[in-house]
Structure formats: C-alpha cells, structure tokens
Length: 442
Image (tube, helix red, strand yellow):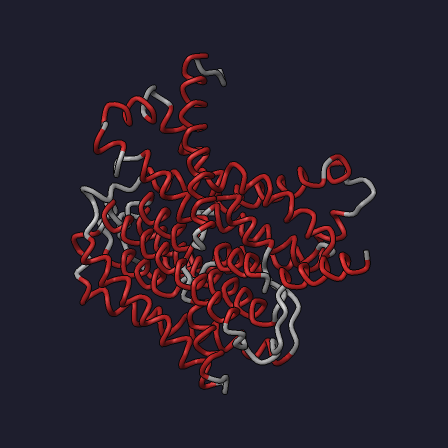
C-alpha cells in the first residue's frame, strides 16, 4: 500500500526532472526576451509533448511520460497541486484597501468588463460554429458559458507578474487592475461552476439544478468571507492554536487544502476553494504576516508546482494534429476586440482620459493563468474537446504577451498610467537612485 516499484519512481523522477528543468530554462529565456514566463513554461510541454517530441519521436514520448501504469496519474496529481497553488497565490494578491474614488472606478470596470463581454460571448457562439468543438459531455449550454467566460476572464497572476517586473506594483493603476481582476474572476468562477455542473449531469438542464448550483457557490463565497471577517484572525492567533505555532506556512496550507476539499464535497471546483483561502487570509491576517506567507508560497509554488502545471498543460496540447490556426486567429481577434472595447467604453463613461482607458483595456484583456485554468477545467470535464482546449490556451498566452510589451512602451515614453500616477518613479528606478546616492556618499 502507498508504494511504487523503485524503477517506476526513478522513471517518474527522471521525466518530471526533465520537464521541470526545461520549464525553468524556457521560462527564463522568455523573460530575457521580455515576454511572460508562463509562455516559456508551456513551451516546455510543447517541446516534450505530442507537438514536437511525440510527433517526431513517438516511442520516446510514450516511454518518457507513459512508461508505466500509474505515471499519467502521478503527473495528473502534480498538475492538480500546481493548479491549487496557482489559485492560492492569486488569492493572496487580492486587493483590500481603497479610497472612494478607486472603489467607484473598480466597480464600474467590474461591471463593464464582465457583463457586455459575457453577453456578446454568449450570443456569438451561434456564429462561431462551436458544435464541432464540444467535448464528451455534449452540452451546448456548457460550452456557451465557457466561451462567454473566455471572452471576459482576466488574469491576476500574469498581470501582477508583469507589474512586478516593471516595478509598478504599488501604483494606483496596478491596485485597481488587480482588484478588478480578482472580483471579476470570482464572478466568472461561479459561472464556470454552473457549466461544470451541467456537464456532470450529461447536459440535463433544469431550473432546480441552476438554482442549486448558484446558491451553493454564493453560500460558499459568503461563508468564507464571513469566516474571514469574524473568526479566522481570532482563531489563527489563539494561544492554543498549536498548528499555527508549529508552522505558519503549514497552517495556511492546511487551510487551503481543507477549503479546497470542502469545495469539492459541495461540487464546487476545488480551485475555487484554494482561491478563496488566499482571499480569506489576505482579508483577515496582518499585512506583514501575509507578505511573509505570499513570499514563501511564491518561492515554493513557482519553483516546482506551478511551472510543472503550465508545462503539463503544454504536454496536453497537440498543435500538429489538433489545432486549427485560422479558427484560433479569428477567435483571438474577436475576444480581444470585445473585451478591449467593453473596458475602453466603460472607462470613458466614468470620465477617464483616452490613454488611461486604453491602459486599463489592455491590462484587463490579459487572460493568462485563469484563461489556461478555464481551458483545463473545460477540457477535463468534457465541455470542450482537445482542439478547442488548445485554442483557449493559445488565446490566454497571446493576450498575456501584449500587456508586457505595451506597458514597457508606456514607461519608456514616460506616459501616465492613470491620474494619481503622475511623475512615476518605478521601484526599480528607486533602487538604482538609492544605489547611486549610496555610492556618492562613499
């Protein structure tokens, strides 16, 4: 019980080590040419997966990743852990402190970036001819919801990484974008929960099923937020909370795993539990403690679990035999146009200037990690087939590329991100100025 043969363990460690090393290497190279690291990590899976290695050397691919009976299940387990860590890390980045003006802007953007894009995506499925892209669940309604979400979804992990790399993480602009993305995605995960519930019921649609699914999701969110506000802080710092005293990180990871498990038992996606665990900790624990946990989680997660998750996503893609580049290009342009226009118009309606509106539109158009998570869940639950899974992943990757390029141009041109960020000195420039002043003092 709970054992593998020694040769199988060695085989799995070899395959995992190669995949992890290539994910880090290509992620590093991606950052060196100023594109998001996640693109390099997924490319590692493309190189070692069916797209390249499996196409040119199928026997080597079969031996490496399907070499013994349980190897695919072990990679599947790592995939799930990486997904949980990604969502937990995203929750820890949730923004909590705003003034009234920022609340107004954020609220307007959440509404403007979600509802119009979702509605357009919903009705566009009739024009996009998605019948051939349905998965084994064979549910037209579920795939409608997934496509609508794919148009409206926004990425916290990738856009926050871009902001961090550019040294603008503490700007007013970054705070509003990340808050909008966080609230935005919670709403869309509820919709995804409804889609997966439909898929699990073999496409059978009833009013009671819809009402039950929505109520469970909303009750789960409300229960977590109430716990965060009234109980979690007090319980965490109780003198007799020996688990917290034994290991702060262990305690918070335990919290994440329990909420993810609870979500699963309620037939809510487990990743939703991990996301809300991070948000609960962010809302209820002192900032200095959250910063420590976020730092440690990012070190552990982004060293092992999360790069492997993205690399395994790449392993599941077959861009040679299961990818339609022309349909992808059309879907990409359509998704970008709808989301960009929705955000830009909303921003102009709340009297933001054209450049600020464009900056917000480009930032919120980044689908990144959540777009890939959406594709993964939709594929694993049979809502979409492998071809549309590849299209959704590639759309997420391409929309992650544009913000990094655009905001480097904005900073190099010394343009304003938004009102309140005038005469911006990035964190990196501050460090350089501090180093120069220190050298001059010497």
